[in-house]
Length: 560
Image 1 (cartoon, rainbow, N blue to C red):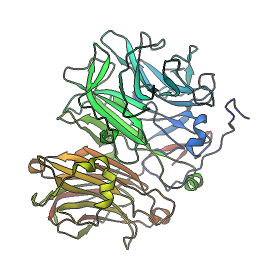
Image 2 (tube, rainbow, N blue to C red; image 1 turned 135 degrees about the vertical axis):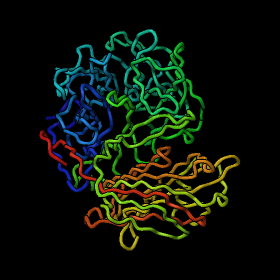
Image 3 (tube, one colour; image 1 turned 60 degrees about the vertical axis):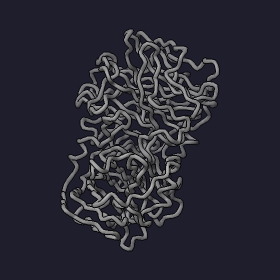
């Protein structure tokens, strides 16, 4: 049967390649929507295409809200979709939004609905039918939908989406922000409500910046510099807290740190960068549409994102799915008040087995140290590097900040340097024809040290038709005092998530070496290709057990 938007809605079963993923949640096109923790259960909602692993550009108008639940953020149960397009204000698709728990009692979903084939967008609300159901399986849309219309002067009504989690202002009113393009400028529109059902737009936006013309998948949350404790946006925010505004655009998740002016209801950045290439990123790899939530169970803020496939469209069709969720991360603000820190949630460590441990290694120029005794296709590796001298750091060129990937390509792991490159070679074939290099290179600017971290996929696979970039980003580092540069890399077959310097910089990558297809295993090495000898005071690595991740297959749930 054809729906009013002109698309087939008969549905198609989704088949899963069960060898492909063991730790990550996998579904056809899974943009994060509304994570939350409620009554002892974690809920993950996400954009989900029930018709299979179709090209998202051709199937965005058939999106539902998928729903999975967990008690530990690692093992998941897949449920029936929570929201489907079935009313005039979402008849062409249920797009991204957020979940808010009102006063700790009432969960509410607010989401973007497509009202026609031109992708005009409005905002809708749904409530759980039965709050005593621990899994909140069924949701009902309110009769007053749409609760926010797209009638705004200068608004591009096809760029008006992704309402944030709500927060309470000092006047006791609820607030949300909605991403928009207004008069060609990226804008976070601000709305107020007494009851979370009837919304009034505040004339002044929360924030706008002409560096970008559309912001989607907004996130807005409070943080205390130097504290890894999360803050509940619906509670009183302590004095001295900062706020973070995250936007998703051009396949990148960028953020700004600043203060929330309560009197003017405005976000005021600490620093304004007119060139968006200089905005700091949540992750410098394939990591998009991230969403965070306050985890009241552990008093932390948790963030995760959609990591899209970088293989071919035909590959996605063959395996029946496209896209995974990253491993959940705790996120907080560094003590300097400038840099977000991210680290895999501690629950992931429950999957560790077969630990190996090396201490006191020394890597001279050209050295490779093979890491043996673990499953190299499914591993968690933590390693510290300590250069024996800081005198040979190369001079930093500030123009590199505009294109770190270019610098990763030109100064890759095969190019000798002063301090670095050093790091890990993973998923390597016997002859090294296939390998992925995750590495650091240290530079010296006038007053500080700058480190380039790269995740270079250009030799990751011999298979044709893949997107294999060299991802990279820069971060400042007090090398004279901190001395050790840490790297943690989580490998889940085609997913590689790397955390540099304790989570100051993160890079998520997708790789598809032949070893994954043949399931023959792969090699892993610590290496140094710089003239300065690098000590490895500590190297710990584990094989990772299989998480119980459940995936929808048509109308049923299968274990993946």
